[in-house]
Image 1 (cartoon, rainbow, N blue to C red):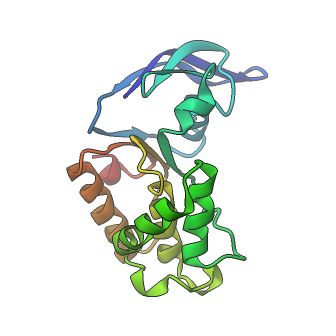
Image 2 (cartoon, rainbow, N blue to C red; image 1 turned 90 degrees about the horizontal axis):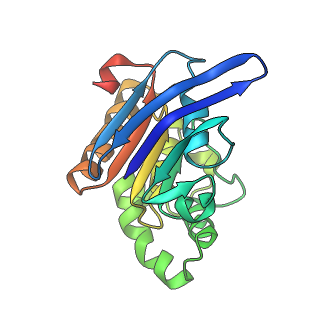
Length: 196
């Protein structure tokens, strides 16, 4: 699902990714473990073709990145480090708007929304505004939003940072279900227990 060879990225004289090699098989949950500033987010941005590597090669879902990054990103669900939900939209409207970014027909998105809300434990919050949600609810909605187009692989950048133990547990329950369903997951974390 993901093959990275000799990946390197520098910012000025600082080498933030140094000769990274990794393989992530279909259906695998792969963790990138490291402290803050270790280059985990930069590595994800490189794999998504959002920034150019200085050297190395990336193949994501069988597609060369960054050359065909847009095509590759259509197969990826992304949960960024910080929630970037639209505060002007309801929970349901956030899912609808995001699905449209992937060229999905409104009817197809509407058909997926109940399942996504159930997955996120937000079935009773469909019409709630984002400001009415707790931090854990926002995080679960961001995960559900990443699934709206039924991606082949999920990239999760520190998905539980800042969450209380109960919210972390709910996120991990959802991730275990995705793995059981055969989804491929790549996540970054600085928690050793999460990486394990």
